[in-house]
Length: 171
Image 1 (tube, one colour):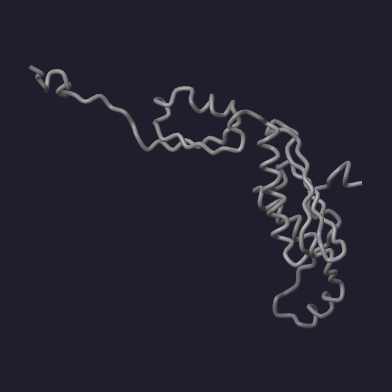
Image 2 (tube, rainbow, N blue to C red):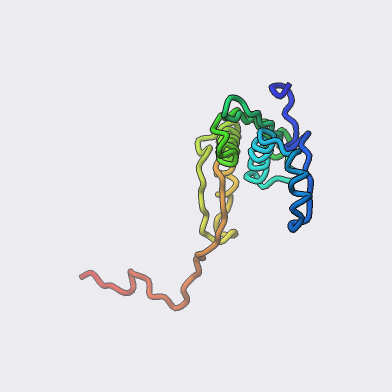
């Protein structure tokens, strides 16, 4: 059952590719189309796409169409990229991509919370040059922050600078 093992997205679905300008083949293959399966696969592919996934990303997704709605069970991680996290999201079948996007959001939030730290779920931008930031990135990372380094400033010594004590006389 999918409550124990969540398969890779799109498992069990078939796709048929035809020429764009072939109405006879389009009519024939349309008889094979299953709308509920299409909705499920669209939600599953949305999760994979939202996580930037492919064959090398540890992601499992199983979507089920039920009573006009869709239930998406998703999991990710469980390797050196982070802890294994599971989520279940329910939504409207009219927009399976939105339900998939909601599952992606919940997966990311759950993974951040599982890592822990006082800064879990926070994004922090370090603007100093890497050699001037010291161990700041490592410290923030250890506290669970998502850290982005964009060195836009640097601190340089000023040659021939007049120091404040020498520039002003207080008599």
